[in-house]
Image 1: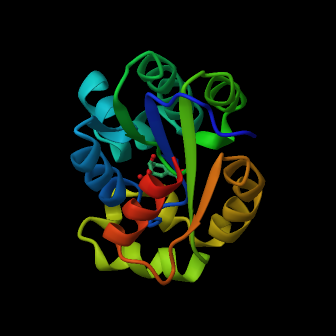
Image 2: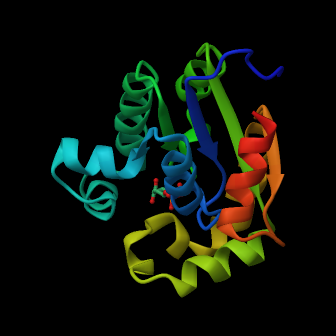
Length: 173
Ligand code: S3P
């Protein structure tokens, strides 16, 4: 898709460990925009952690709540938004993203191995239910790739620091 002429939101997509939250916070700081992470907004709204929602209500329920949060946030301006890695699995979410005017979607790409190792270096790996389901991880990643690649911008992050990634995005939009 073509980059929107006027941008009032930047949405970061990519697998767990892609750096969406780190890069998103840096980008927002540089733009003097607000930064939000869909997982955090959802946890506050539901007053439960992602792991609790998965355990108590199941993944389908989580995806529905996630989609509602994302659709609501797409009405905000001057916002950098980091999406949960699996948000693109939901058709309604994909549709809302691609039909949202003034929204630039950026895919932070790296290999699955790099992203797993980044996740493992962070505290609280147990807080990511999808990460712990190792058998399905590669097939999930491969199923999501075509949706991630539908972004306006694709940034190869393997050799970049979060700061360099943020600079590349700013130079492109
Ligand atoms: C998920 C990724 C997580 C979170 C949830 C499910 C996934 O977000 O939404 O645990 O399905 O890949 P991050 O990508 O921010 O870790």
